[in-house]
Amino acid sequence: MSRTTTADLVLRNARIHTVDPELPEAEALAVVDGRIAWVGADADAAARVGPDTTVLDGAGRRVLPGFIDAHNHVRLGSDDACVQLAGVGTLAGIHARIGAWLAANPDAEWIEAEAFDYSAIPDGRMPRASDLDPVTGSVPAFVLSYDVHTAWLNTAALQRLGITRDRDILPFGRVDKDPETGEPTGFIKDFAIRGLSRDGHRALRELGLPWASADRQYGRLAKSLDDAIRFGITTVVEPQNSLDDLALYTRARTEGRLRSRIVAALFHPRGTTDADLDDFAAAAREYADDRLRVGPLKLYIDDVVEPRTAALLEPYRGCAHHRGETFYPAEEFAELLARLDGRGFQCFVHATGDRGIRTVLDAVEHARAVNGERDARHQVVHVECLDPADVSRFAELGVVACMQPRHCAPEIAGPGRDWAENVGEDRWHKSWPMRSLHAAGAVLALSSDWNVAEMDPMVGVYTALTRAPLAGGPAWVPSETLDVETAVHGYTMGSAYANFLEHERGSLTVGKLADFVVLSRDIMTIPATEIPDTVCDVVAVGGEIVHTTA
Image (cartoon, rainbow, N blue to C red; front, side, top):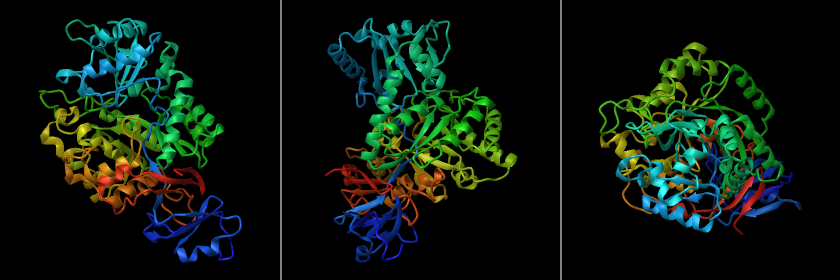
């Protein structure tokens, strides 16, 4: 831009961390037509200001690129109509929360609750219908775990949903049964794989579960989108959608709720056909602008550690043989990934256990052998328990590690919690090895996994730097912490690269979209303990100020 050309917006008097190695720090930037037209010294900013220019005074505050949350379930979200069980650490506490809600809603036809913690169930076991029955009585109850990978039903809900000893697999999950009686226990596994699928949601709607209705889904999405922009998340990667769900984003866009940009991945469950893939490709062509893009595919290779459904190389602690299972035999998954890779799809694969992760890496290696090397940027999502022998393979195979720092916080996964106890102390060194992956040259795409954990990137950055509890206390596996520059890169350029957006987003570079945040504190220099209290004073998307605290 010449010195005589004026900008639509000029940000001055700021401390800009650009995440661009060519110009790491700056004091001002100018925006024209939604893109960054100039970045430089504050003394040179006045030449970009005209009579119609909006001038934003940074007041010496830290400015970063807008955050890119590489794995954020905004469509799933959190539901205000549900009993909130987050933070409840005992079964008695769960009873108290549900009982209070039922007293306030005596005419409720369903009790719906979310975010129960596995560790709240006594004796390290999984929950049963009989644990809910004393407080719920004849009102059917549907309770989701904090990771939304399992559901917990009372006896009335088992009856309402038609779950009997004769049923093993449901459209929305896998029925856990008592090994002695063969009766359903009330615990439903594989809910994330089945219940959040197109068929699973349709089945739950048809069965009358209010949580699955379109209006409730949209309410969760709209609320989560409002939260995202408040937290400075200017791009959200929503990792698991069906074609039915795309209408929700269109509605949000029409109603002005889609202020963050969206990348929507489509769920590829077992049984997905070539015709389905054709439909996915058509959707990717239809939704392809900088506000709403559809394209990647989401797959699962294993489940989660807490209920011992992740796939481990060695048995779970205290088990002679149980290692968890993969959803596909290794050879079948390798052929599947090669077929999807051959069609040009990028794949996000959920993998938490070390055997699950290795299965995915082996599949990528096979796909490259079959199809030749290409810039696929397949992702292993979560990377919770990684064998050291596989650390270097991420960079070697061009696989992105999409990780959620908050998941490794001691109060969530550490000593005394189900994750740490199930894998055993001798494997704790494998937990969320962010530093090792970064040192080996892997691309880290950091994210929240909302609503499994807090959406706020400040919470994620803090945990990446400390691996300590949010309220303070001893760190867990501190050898795998990150420095602040690497953590910020993971929430900006790392996540941009992971989603083929590095030429448009992720850094404050001339020519890129003008997505940025002005922070209340300088997270690049303050003590890590002060980072969680930092807020976004200003959020801009395409140079338009969409959120302020003023």
